[in-house]
Structure formats: structure tokens, C-alpha cells
Length: 511
Ligand code: AMP
Image (cartoon, rainbow, N blue to C red; front, side):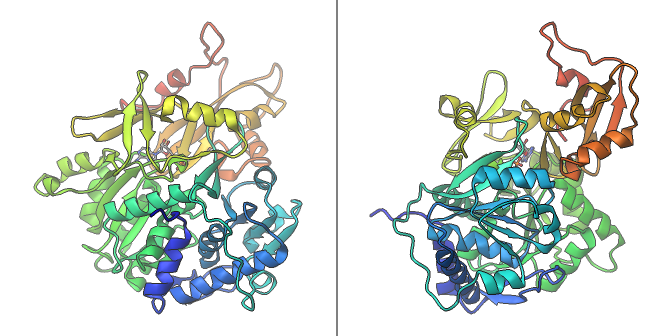
């Protein structure tokens, strides 16, 4: 028998088996009225009401519904409501600029736009057939509790469930098409490797727009895990909520855990969740010192995964295995600093140039309306990650550099080319190269090296302000250095590797 693997399976099981259990505790501090505690029965009922509302608007199967929101119960329920009835959810990074929102909504061809009140002003100019502010307008204008939704006519595991726009090697973000099958395999293998169970409480310290919260909303629903969205990342608030909700599982980039470590140093009394909490870290290679501190100062279990938006994201995992139990803290941290061994059903390899390649059921189907980028990424039957790495005798991958011209700051990707375009559009700039330089807090800092046009003058602050008019604040350079010239190869290419060298003291060039 073959039954299509669709995202609906997760919420259906949550409702059937864990209907009475609190499924989501909404963020209390948000501009929309919070939904409080929702049982999984209520979450499923609301998901059906959303689908019925979309039916009433005439939004058909395969149509895109874009949402721009901080973490909240309403964003979470859309991950269940929209794909389960054959439509496609497009969760958008809420930190982007108006220009970027406009591009994504237009490029995805969304017929519905849902927005958090905090970004309302930035999307005012976008033309889209239907839009609702998350909150009262969405509750009374979209949700239809008086009608049953039309079931998906032909559930298909190869249909697109979500499109996540990600900044990569091109000047414009690319839309990563995730199929139901991608999401299903990611959610179940991730849950299996992390031994997620119905005794877990999962807090969303990861922005849910980012790769659908790494697919953990599906894992959590399928296993009846209580979910706690958190809107703003703040170390002390994370500790308070771990205590308040009995959180046992969280995921995030190294910068999140640095903020928790800082807050724990000031925390009055024992750190909440000691010997209870497991964290999953990815997005950048965590320094072994951070790993040792998480285990010693917080008493939380450290796990690392590696992956990309294009891989749903699950490719490799490094869990503290039994063999690590008797290692010294330093050796244990070293073992855990590797990105990990391939997840069940995934294969990894490296190309002649050292690029990490992957094959598996979590790898994207294609980039939305971008066949060239798809062909490049999947060339030769392997997914090309753009990361440089090595695989050791135990099958563990270590990421050592980045082949693609991408900077990762605070866990979010920034395309160097996109920032270069924005800096270059300033009339005083003759040449520019944007690189990442190491930073303790953010991992990497976006840094622009600028050659001025003859006779022109401009300050660092003016360049930064100029970039911020078109790009999200976190993409703007944190530092601008003025140079006489930018060295190039004989063929006129800028060698980023050489430019970065001056700033990096370690043997790797990712942080
Ligand atoms: P994104 O698609 O935004 O999730 O970013 C994916 C990128 O994050 C990868 O291509 C890597 O460059 C980086 N990354 C993710 N996980 C790790 C990890 N465990 N170690 C090093 N880099 C990572």
C-alpha cells in the first residue's frame, strides 16, 4: 500500500491522540491579541477554519499564501492549515525591508498576504488580492468555523508544501520549494535522531520563517509535544520560560546560546532545565568553548546538526553518544564541534574542490521559477551545499569554509553580492567587496571594503544608512573600511579568500 506522506498527517495525529493536551502556548507579548493556551483539538479546528476561509475566498489548490510574522501561535497554525489542503505556504523573514517583501510576495505570486501588525506599514504598498492583519482582522475576516474545508482533491507527497526564500549566491533571494515528502522525512528522521517524545516541551527559539522552524512544528505535532513560540530572542526570557513551561527541547544558532550563557551568569539560583534540556545547534560552526560552557554552566545537552533551507534542513547530526561519556570536557566539546554524521537515509560526500555534497529525501525539489539555479544546485545528482568540509573515518562531517559567497550573521544568511549591489548604488563608491569577518557575538560581521570614486567623499555611517534604505538592517555592513584599491586576479576577479585572510586568525574561514 502506498499512502501519500503529507504534512496533514502530523496535525491529524495530534488531534486524534493528543486532542485534550495543550498543543501551543501563544506568545503573551505581541501586538495582536494572544491566543493563550490552545489544545491540539483547538489547533486542528482552527487549521480547518483557516482552510475553509481560504475556500471561501476562492484560493485554489497550489496557490500561495504568504505570511510575514514573528513567532506566534498564528504563524504556527498556518504551517498546518495551508499545506494540508493543497495550498503552498510562503513564510517570509519579518526582518526584511519593504523592497524585499515586495519582491518575495510578487515573485511567489501569492494571492493572500498575512502580516503581523508590527510590519503593517512596510507592506502597505504591496498589491495582492487578499490581505489580513494577524489578529482581529484575521480572526473575523478569514477564519470560517461555520464551514468544513474542501479536502485536498488529490493529496500528493511530491506537491510543494512551502516556499522559503533564502539569500544565497545570487543578488536576489531564491524560493526553496519544499515538498510534503521533504517535510515528512525531515520531521520524522529529525524526531527519531533527537528521540523526541510526548514528554517533551519544545520552545521555538528559532524563527519559524527560517526553514519552517527546521520542520520541528511537524515533529512536535505528530508526537503531541507542547510548543511554546517566543517572539524576541533574549537570554533571560528564554531561561524564565524554560522554568515556567518545563521546556526540554530548543533549537537555534550559536548566537542564541551565547545570549543564554550571558543571562545564566546573572541568573539568581540554579539554571532552569539543568539535566532536562536538550538543545540543537546549527547555522554556523559552534566554538568548542561555547559547547563546553553550555554543558557545564547550563547543564543542557548539546547537539549539533548541519543543513540548509534547501535540505529541510536535516543532513547530519552529532549527538553526545555513549562513547563520549568518559571523555574529558574538552575532548567531548571537540567531538561535538563536528557538524555530525549523516542522518538515516542521507548520504554525504565531498567534491574534488572540497565542497560538501548531499543526497537524500530532504533535498529540495527545485527553486521556485528558477530552473538554472535548480540545475546548478543539483548538478550530477548531488545537492551542492556551497560549504567546504571534510569527512572523517567515523563518517562525521566538519565544516571548514564556505565556497559560496554568503555571510552568516546571527544565524541568518546574507548574500555578499546583494550587499555589494546596495553599497555600489551609492554614487561615491567606485568599487566594493563585502566579506564576513569573525565576531564573538554574531559569528560573522558583514564588512564592506570600499574604494571611493575620484574626488568623492562619504562616511561609514552614510554608507550604512544608504544600504538600510533597500535592505534589511541585519544585512547592512556593521563596518566599512576605505581602501586605495581592491586586489584582483589577472582575470579581474576579486579573491574574497585573500581579503578575508587578513581578519581571520584561525585555520578556518567560517565562524
Ligand atoms: P540556511 O539555508 O539559512 O539555513 O543556511 C545554511 C547554511 O548555514 C549552510 O550552508 C552552512 O553554511 C551554515 N550551517 C548550517 N549548519 C551549520 C553547522 N552545523 N556548522 C557550520 N555551518 C552550518
